[in-house]
Length: 455
Image 1 (cartoon, one colour):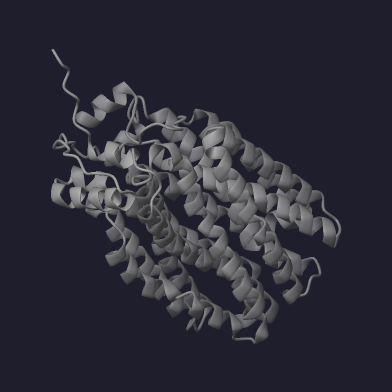
Image 2 (cartoon, helix red, strand yellow; image 1 turned 90 degrees about the vertical axis):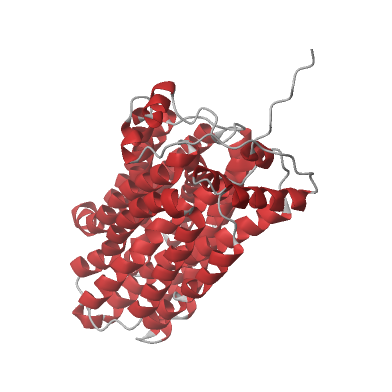
């Protein structure tokens, strides 16, 4: 008796494909939105330095801290709500909406007439920014073939370096040119609003999401679009089994709570160290005697070191695995922060800043590769958004903590604290699952958690 081959699911059909032009379009299309997001986040560091140097509105250090932190309040809320919405109305829809929200809010921020107005616009910017990142990484991970999924998501995250470099270029060439230069910088940051339409109509919706919503014809059309690009013949797939959406409570079900806790610790720690360092970097350099232009120039060079960090992480993520790569780059970030704390000359500040930038952004790339793999499709965007939202709480706290840390112990204490947080994140990494080369939904939940989801 001849055994009958089991039907090939649409997820398996996507996993068997090589990396195609359609994958490239998806990564570039999502990555461009990611870069515009990074540009908006990066611009605020240069705006803060300009407001402080020019004494716009008589702004105080405390007000500068809140201008930095209020955006992360919005990001914390946006990440959580964005993940929930993406599991209900779709990844692409939420992605386009977030670009529209933070693009329009950034343009409006250029017209700010007081600190209070800028705070309101920064909060709205944060709402859009916070929701966009976990949703984009989820969308890309759900299309990427299993054997290169981690690498593809790291390359998506590498667009962050492109966006931050764009912010550094705008900061260097635009912000110092006049007292209104920071307004022109924010006006440039309105570009995502225009790109939202491209995302809405140009990118595919997640096949896995479409299947959970019973939109089988759309899911089949999306798979065939990628198969055609690869020159692979389409095959029939069975109807997927209906799966109930478990809701956020499943993140803390027996069998998932340990990995959720580990993921949240990593997200919190890396957010605290990264945003505390890079949001304040230009301002700290100015406070140490650098001119505004020289401070921005150093920040630009330090930012460029992110690109090779992503490249190395993208290579190692499929060679070593997720956990070893993430832990290594977090330890490297801790060393870089410690060296920066001890730097005493212009040259050592630049070199140690580049070391910190290299390892820190490589760690971010690995973290975004790991995060969508922790949960199944029905919980993936919710879980990624919740982790990012919790991490944004650290983004709120970090800029507020920098001024008192500087007063208490100078830059040495500031960056020593960041090194401690990087070390904590490296330790928590070992509580995450290792999913290198596995299908995205293969053993996404422990058995007890799976039963919890099915209830």
